[in-house]
Length: 109
Image (tube, rainbow, N blue to C red):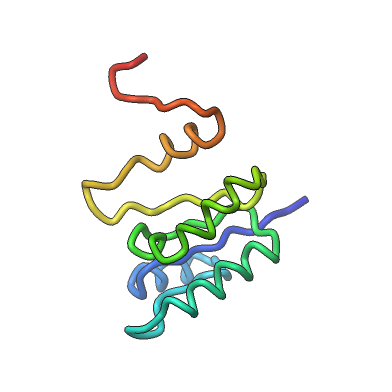
């Protein structure tokens, strides 16, 4: 079963992803984009994409939807945030925490 990758990011980054051949790319169409983003996110879930990469700033607008997927323990899509600053949590740590229920910290291994 082949699954697609979906990406929600800034307009500048979206151009690069589109040039790289990704088809499911979304970026804010203007100032008031929350509803558009939420509809796009829901469509990706219904279409059963494998991974949704989403800029951390945009993730905040769909966080409740992503957390609902986690509560339902759905295998797909895996939602991975794209960090936009140094204060961001490591997305790999979040995936491990989601999958295994444990938190990995630097120096703990």
